[in-house]
Image 1 (cartoon, rainbow over the protein chains, first blue to last red):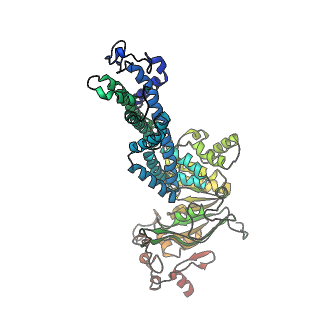
Image 2 (tube, each protein chain N blue to C red; image 1 turned 90 degrees about the vertical axis):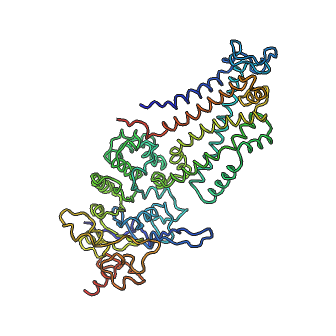
Length: 273
Length: 333
């Protein structure tokens, strides 16, 4: 029996973030938005404020816990959009080939030539700030890697005997893509999706840091970092705790991706007697 | 033996050609044509087993792909059970119920992510052959017929040996009750020790189910065990065909003789059996002028090196050969 340490540690970090998001009202000790108390601003971590308080006297612990809701929603939903777009485009391009493949490959190359954060910025500028705009902007800009992997896998797998066998059986293209190709490329796609979730959380932080994401006073880890940047030397806990939250969540997702890849490969499972 | 009434054969391949454009620049310049299959005609009657032999790269597998509809032919005609095969418009579902294929590599031809039971049930479900219970019964029955146990249905392909996997491949090909199965080198990826088992299983199943077989192999000894008729293919063309006794007892084409000599036989001395054909198969992009076999043929004459090459001609009833030497010998006698 293998230890699968990466799966458990990664899953643990991610589960911690999910728990924080789900149980935010229980875990928070103060109101994250309205609990401002200018008399007690920028207090260091202590008994009252576990993670210290920010410039407006709000509890950073409570804000980090509530911020998990935004960060995880953005990470999961926008990566889901990316995965669906990338997989659908990639698998059809790889399997059908021809002009459709040329079109998809061209589009992918164009997307890769545009820095995705800049593109997301442009979309945010059109849609205006907010959670929904964030989901759309990040969901439309990071599907290229999924697409490339799905396309390459489809091209490699479509000449496999079992795909030919399915054709000889009379299976349609849709059935072949869903039943023969997709399960056999799920491993790398899931790894990319978990890594992408981490990337989306970072991108949300960046956009919120630039003031285009979640608007104050609502907490997201990115916007908290943004607030902290003016006096990061004097009051380091302002930046440290949301930063650590991002770090451990993204690290957890990356480890989880590796772990999932291992167990999703049936050939690595122990043989039955 | 019963005399066959002259009915329409189950499979008719008529002057089939499959060409591939090779290379070629951005503007199509410099493209060459690889004639993988170049004017092959072949028939398989129902219940019959026909062997197709030839070296690697002679076009056997391309021919098989064309017959099951995986490869669009460049020209020629394929008729299976009265259905003419046309690229694009062919009714794949109907074709699937008539012709199935056993693949060469049992490791690549079974989806590693699906359990054996699902692999066998999927075609039945696709073709709506029975409800859940009926499908389960058919799967269990077919597993038993190929020498596996019904409880193997819950396992993944990687839990089986190569021979067992090929049994699963055979089960999958037969589960739709086709009239013809194409076996594309079904044992060449297997250990020598289990080849005979798989061949015997194929013979037994096709006989009991009355399924016609097109047995493709580079190994004449495999074909010898199960086929009624044999066709020998070289560089995209059939060079000799006939009933298996004739081919094995009196091979007329030098290439067939070379293949026969390649069958290991413990009762023949090794000396003097090797040098029947020397060298390699020529590059199919630039086939030799005249008879394609002449560079390797120990009997080649001047005529063999000139275009046009020999065409198939009958040297006795049912036995045809494409060799000037053999045809000339017949005229002389």
